[in-house]
Amino acid sequence: MVAQTHAAAPARRQYTHREILEVMSGLMLAMLTSMISTSVVGTALPTIVGELGGQDQYSWVASATMLTMTVSTPLWGKLSDLWGRKLLFQSALGLFVAASLVAGLSQNMGQLIAARAVQGLGVGGLSALAQVILGDIVPPRERGRYSGYMGAVFGISTVAGPLLGGFIVDTDWLGWRWCFYVVVPFAVVAFAVIQRVLRLPKVKRNTSIDIWGATTITASASALMLLLTLGGNQFEWNSFWTYFLGAVSLLMLALAVLAERTARNPILPPRLFRNRTFVLTSVASLFVGMAMFGAMIYLPQYLQIVKGLSPTESGLMTLPMVVALFLAGVISGKIVTQTGKWKIFPVVGLLIVAVGLFLLSRLHVDSSEWLIGADVAVLGIGLGLSMQMLILAAQNGSEMRDMASTTSGVSFFRSLGGAVGVAAFGAILTNRLKDEITAMLAAAHIKVPGGGSVKLGSPDAIQHLPGPIKHIVLEAFTRGLETVFLVGVPIALLGFVATLFLKELPLRTNQAPAPGPKPLSKDDMVLAGLLLELISQRIERMNGRPSALLSAVAGMAPPDDRSERERARTVAQTVLRPTSRALIAQATPPHKDLVSGGVAQ
Image 1 (tube, one colour):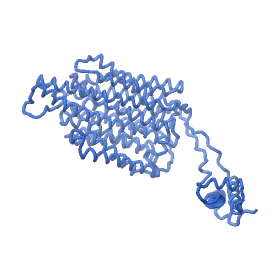
Image 2: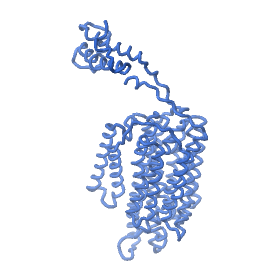
Image 3: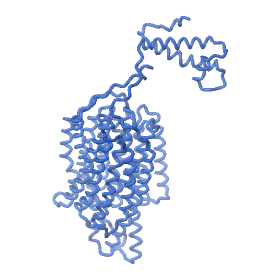
Image 4: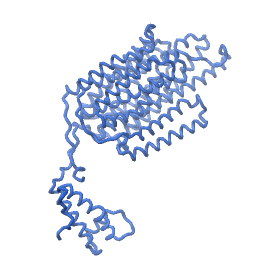
């Protein structure tokens, strides 16, 4: 029992550069599949929502995926400890593909949102397990160069996705449903490549699934999402439902904390929150997710509705951001590998993100494409410098046993930030649109034909509104999106403040943990057991006279009103003697009993 505590962990296998690249090829292809699906849909969302109806549900199409991705991310890491990384990675890929096919067959917003929610479960597994596997096979000091490859996948998918989505939507004989079908052949190839090249050692881990923790975390996040999405739209902010959903979210959060503290193998082990690096990188990732996903989801609305660009042109306008993100990620990764210094990148990166969001908030109806491109490039540089470095810092500051939980935890908070950001920004935009359109129509003394309010359909339908009404709608969208991007500025600055307090720990240069104390031999265990038994007997024979031994043993018990001798005898009976028996029993065959007759004086 005691000896096992001090046993040194076995050294981990060291992978060659070629072996790492082979594994990376499978991970990157699978990640490309899920990311392309997300970015493909991004430029098509205005058209999809316009056809199926429900501008007020726009945020849910994106946030449903974000929510399920968020709550499932840490669970995937824990499941991979139980059933293996490869099996779970392939399962996540299969789930993602099945949900994509169902999304393409959706006939209304409810079906689409449900399919997107299931799709998010698969994306959560792919995003979390890719980083976990990378952490398993690559030392932290070398991880910067390979994180750059992950950044490249993000960049390629972000470029290819909007362009592909725009082409599909603009092609009459395809239609938006092919935005979901197009990922299927990519996924089949990815599955085959992973089956062939992803060879990880089978590590037996004693773990269990934290169902209660997963349930309470999901319920807390869901209640918060409902509050942010429906508040001010389906019910007033100062209403019963606001307080009810807020109370449910807080209650589930408190139960989640209790569940994680009592679970045998919690999704987010409480010991992680005693790790300063994990806490600060998680907080920073939360704010990065809010700023990043909020900007990326609503930027296409500005480009397609306010600027009147086609989906394809809208995708092209994101190219400067993606190129900047890719270059910043790769260059910073190489610098980290060469110098071992990483803190400067997330600090500067989040400051640049705040600047980029402020520049986006200054855009208006007449802004030039050159100005838009420059502004989104600034945002891309900031994201490229910060995203991967936060995960690297968290992994480097964690123990090897917590690699999966740490990686999944940081990804969880980034995804949670994205889900909350999309929902909150969507609520801001929806309410600003309603208020601005109503106010401007009243100021211009314009009555909507047929009465009621202006019906907001697809971008093409908005462009064909009557002249005065069209101008009011475009101006309302401009003001609403200005508020959305402006709200993102203090959020990014909060992340910047969190990174300032990070301690720049030296990057580890190998995967093996520091060697622990040498295990006790059987003779040592018997000797230690006999010594503890001798101390116990000596304590019991003492008559209360002052003694250094008596004081030392009594000091092991919590202070109370008993005498020093009584406290020392309690320690001898409840701690020293049981430990003595356990040591001797572990070192000797069961039929021997070296302690039953006492120890010779």
